[in-house]
Image 1 (spheres, rainbow, N blue to C red):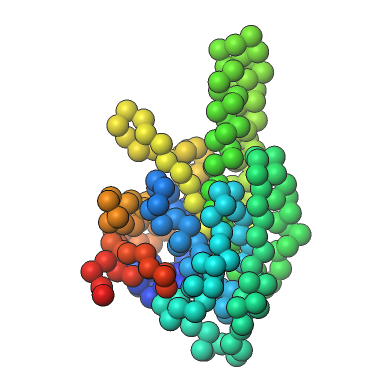
Image 2: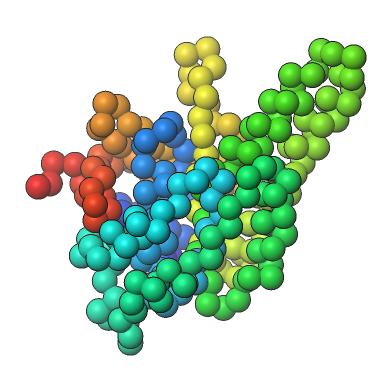
Length: 249
């Protein structure tokens, strides 16, 4: 299986080439840890090469201004080796952004994926895989002890089944089309332990797991699961041009 560039030299070295094609790579962590930034860096890198990117944005994190910042930066993969240097307008046109506002619309976005997949698509991103799922699941769980507890239990099972269906669809597309898929996920606290939202479902379908931690502005990526690499870490800083290893000027 091949890889696509992560859009950053240090990340490519850390991952021995970049993000694997044909699988789901999941970033998870708290707010401000860099999940969306890593997705944006990879997005711009692929779009600058003339490839198409499908970006499902459930949290409103996609920013055209951030695309422009990364496009102008020398830190993100350059297009010098490509046959044609693209303009910012052409780069933006290579990114299809879908913005579901509820879990039903998220499912509809996934139903649209197959219509947009072609040999020019190299990357699919779902930024906030469980954010809208979490709202529907919480509503169903809230009514679990009420008069309609049986219906609430069925609703919880239905929401879980829909999330499983979405993850399975991503895996099928990734495998059949040899596309890299990046997913971001939230965490929550349980008995002083940080857990991934819908962790059992997301972990099952993800072949690569990267935990991102932000401790007072000190960001670290931890490789928790990979098909060929051991667990390891990378301290990094976020700047206008993307990210860099912590300690660099």
